[in-house]
Image (cartoon, rainbow, N blue to C red; front, top):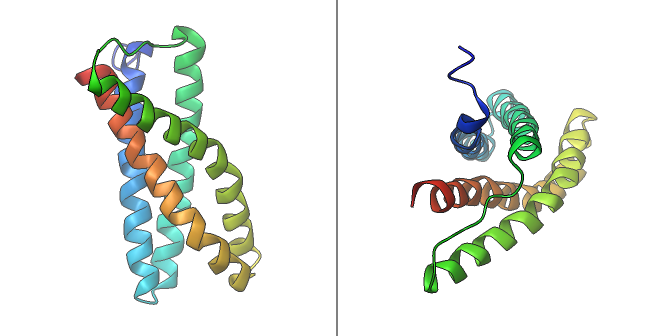
Length: 141
């Protein structure tokens, strides 16, 4: 088991966690649009838990490996850094937004929850999806 979960495998695990978070966010959104509150709550708590696991894994990886350089040249380099910069900036923003959104829901302040969730959901989904794209461009391209 330890050979499967090594530092070298963490980027792929992180991309998988981002994908799982994106799926749960999307399904949770679908549930709430249908008025199904309990499955929405489960999906969103799952997305939050997976995102916390991702953040822990991400920090462990970069603690051990440091920064990883993007070595491609030309137009793809510009695309990569555009995606990376927006991803990093919004990732920093999404943590407090997600905490506030979750806190409002757990306190049953649903008016506040809905108002901030309108911003949190698309930004969080963007961060999750671009995390997968950054992984693919950096490690698989």
